[in-house]
Length: 166
Image (cartoon, rainbow, N blue to C red; front, top):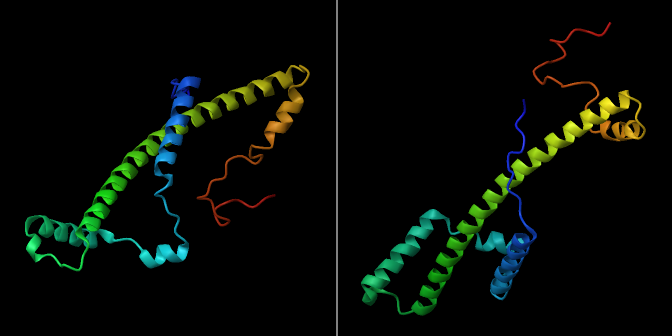
């Protein structure tokens, strides 16, 4: 017996509205600071990479513990603001990615439930077609286009391993 109703928890209209409103608030709060990079700019600026993050963190540590060793050519207030913004953005991205992963998992379960219900309805419609109830033959004909008419193909089979058609 196949699994059914993997996720019976559904979103109310109020919850959907609250999520939409919250996402709009996030987009609005971030809009003034978000920048779109062209592919060329992405390539030019690249990613800092883990090794370079370690350098940034070590320079920050030296600045905090021994400021006399810091270059006077650096705007250290701006440097700290960049570090703080980067930390905030990284934390926000991690939280949003976690939410996105959870939403994807929930969507997979709802998709599975919908597909199983659709298969059950298709089987029911095929049964009703056999009883000559009006309307079901057209429904089955329309739905049958989504199913492989030749059966399941075994990818392990090759022309050498299948018997020739007689």
